[in-house]
Length: 279
Ligand SMILES: NC(=O)c1ccc[n+]([C@@H]2O[C@H](COP(=O)([O-])OP(=O)(O)OC[C@H]3O[C@@H](n4cnc5c(N)ncnc54)[C@H](OP(=O)(O)O)[C@@H]3O)[C@@H](O)[C@H]2O)c1
Image (tube, rainbow, N blue to C red; front, side, top):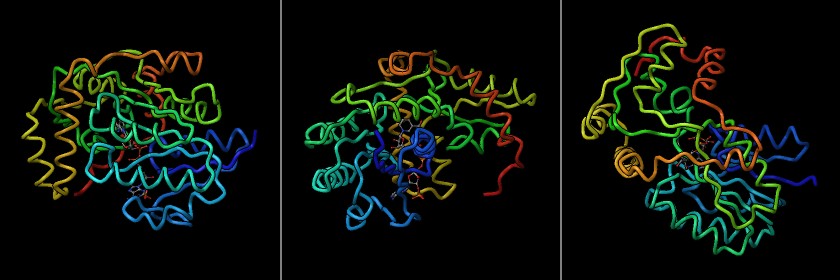
């Protein structure tokens, strides 16, 4: 089957990899973001129709997070327009353990489109392509929730799962939960990276309030400060959210990538050898 795939958030951590997977399988891929042509902006529903036109299936990455105010309205409008545009199926990226995101999952489930929900644990790539990269480079990773055991998942695994369930209709109506093969604390994650890089990186446990104060001092918008507080408190604060799932194995027929293997492959990119970023 050769389909036209829309990848919303196609320049991001998972979307870029999903696009690569689909292209490699010979599919047509349209990447959508604020700088693409046609451009797509979640904050401007007038941009939705142009990217949906002539598409068969779509991977939906909401930004910054399905838990933020405004996400339900946006997902509702997008799915209504997708149905009208004749799309057959969508896959929504959601966050494992995010109660607030479930309302958006339900909107997709009720949309009339075929769908699969992919609920992901925290990504390995937060340390190399996301919010924690600067900390790793600076040699001091100050994060709250030192007792949380997190089944970090690799973005390569998420993307392979997404690409598979997008084309395979046997997953229609299902929620697939993707995690890594084991749980680890922030300290263990940082120590694993430090050992592989061969330099000292300190893990400093701080309170959620201290973390939020740091974000405010760095000039980040209030909505981001709220979001990180929510993610640390609600997602990492609930032990039920910290379970390992075996859905990567079920969907791909192989084990999910271990954090150690993520570190080894990331080391070869040189991303952790940059100078300390100047803010
Ligand atoms: N990081 C984690 O540990 C984690 C865990 C579970 C779930 N998630 C979920 O993952 C999602 C983020 O996915 P990701 O990490 O693959 O993406 P990402 O690396 O954060 O990249 C964001 C993508 O969204 C686009 N984007 C940003 N603002 C936009 C806007 N206003 N309108 C349209 N596009 C916009 C960006 O492109 P442009 O900037 O060019 O527009 C980019 O392609 C969030 O929904 C988050 O809740 C993350």
